[in-house]
Length: 150
Image (cartoon, rainbow, N blue to C red):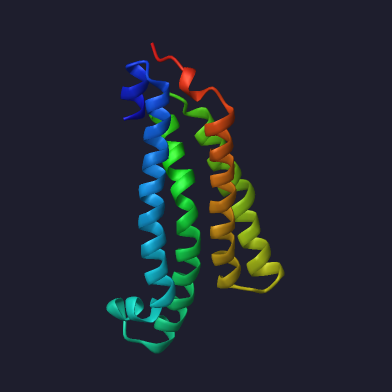
């Protein structure tokens, strides 16, 4: 829809489309995230009945529910910029968030600080937050909407 609106020379409508998509995604992720955060054991039991698996999965689901809220911004803006023809900024921001932040942080927390899987799971929402901040900056501070595709 962003590309369609930009093709119609409606930058304002393209930006509004992105913000509307973010708000819908954010509301959905927030509601779903609350359910996952407060009832992780019930969700885990759907897939497995072993106590250790349920305990481990429940902790992971809490991390996932927190990080999922921030996916709204990063994911929607990234795809919107790509739809507008701007693929370099989303690629660069994803490289920064995943390769330069998430993977080294997961390694450091899990190995060096001996947090094991908790270190890996902590790195995921941190990376999501950083990716979202980078994408929000790209959305509001760059000229992605002026990109012309021949």
